[in-house]
Amino acid sequence: MKFSAIPFVLLLLALLGACTTQNEPVEEGISITNNEHGQRLVGMSEDQARAEARRMGRPFRVVKRDGKALMVTMDHVPGRLNASVDQGMVTSIHVEGEGVIKLNNKAQ
Image 1 (cartoon, rainbow, N blue to C red):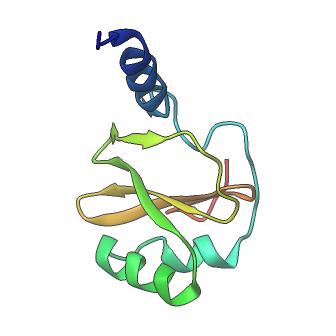
Image 2 (cartoon, rainbow, N blue to C red; image 1 turned 45 degrees about the vertical axis):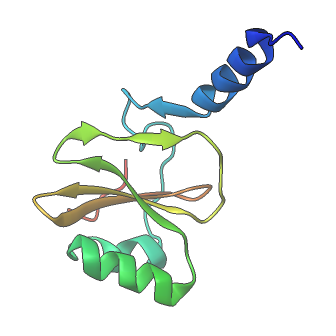
């Protein structure tokens, strides 16, 4: 039986295509002024925010740590909390499908 690498390569490319390093800020393009889920987490430690998100039944992930964008999947999960963390503290939350809450409580 002869092995063909083409299906394997195509599968590998499809899997790698689901991940990306985000060069642009996650917050870009969405703007809100108030969101209780995101606002509650901004200013907490990463561990506290993760626990609070779990308590709220919301998916949580860190997408930026200390100014560096992390590799994340590009799937859209409405309500998922995407956190930016600086020095262990949540500085902004992007709520997928809703908007952004920043540390200074001003949305962009």
